[in-house]
Amino acid sequence: MMWRIFILYLSLFLVSCGTEQIDSPLQGYVESRQINLAPRAIGIITTLNVDEGDQVAAGELLFTVDSERAEAQLNESISAKAGAEARLANLRKGGRPEEIRTATEILREAQTALTLAEQTYKRTKNLVAKGTVAVARLDQDQATLDASRARVKEAESRLALIRLPARDDIIAAAEHELEIYIAAITRARTELKDRSLIAPTGGRIETVYRRKGEIAGPAQPVLALLSPDQKRIRFFVPEPMLPHIHHEGIVMLHCDNCADGLQGKITFISDQAEYTPPVIFTEKERAKLVYLVEARPEQPELFLNGQPVTVTLP
Image 1 (cartoon, rainbow, N blue to C red):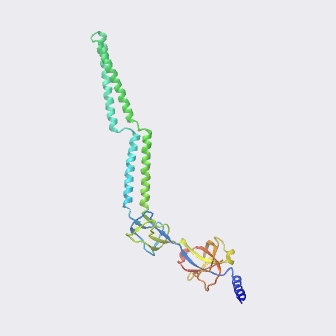
Image 2 (image 1 turned 180 degrees about the vertical axis):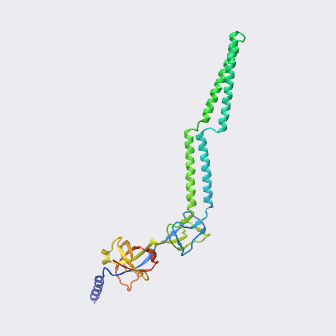
Image 3 (image 1 turned 135 degrees about the vertical axis):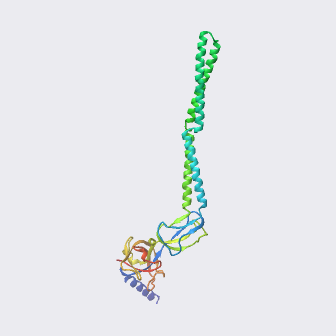
């Protein structure tokens, strides 16, 4: 008796497999993969420009979180950079104008004293030659002349030194400091940008998780965006039909109140077999081994999330 029942079930199974046709319609449904949007920086939501059901375009501002601290950090970095630039320019340029003017005046006074010392020495030398002045006076004037010449050389060296830029290692350190502040500005601007979020793609606002005044962050999404290009037609293919299903193959799509000639391209074929799930819209359930297949519709905007779709091979 048990063998007869087994043979009966086996026969029914073989018949059902044998009657599977290549052009048999396959039942599926539309699944939309939403994009959860959250700010990269944690903060209190200050503006929320959309609501559930709104259509948004790519690049549209959706919401912002408080940015006072980020703006202050940016302003502080900009001021620090300006100071670093001024210090570097000063090191490259040399001494300050006041220092250069002072050194120039000292050199001019030393040169004037040298001129006077030279004239005094010449007069004393003539007087010594005439026997009017003692030789000791000439020696004294010679010492004064030598000292005046030394002061002129010292003043010239000081002026040249002041006019020179700072040492290479000091300038390199100032340049490194400037680079640090430039990087701080970039970081502060990125931080400020991260406190507002624009739509990465066009689509429909499916869910608003948080409202104005609530705290949001990387782990607390604010919105769920449903983009048309994220819609897929999911259907299940019986094992005998697998040889006729190929990646990037074209399938025909049919749904209630839809235009004729809609197509989709196969983007995924599961390599894991499963039994016919109850969620697909079959006219009657059968225990059959099937494989999940996904297709991207050419006109995703014509399909609704969860909508039943009949799939056929062209």
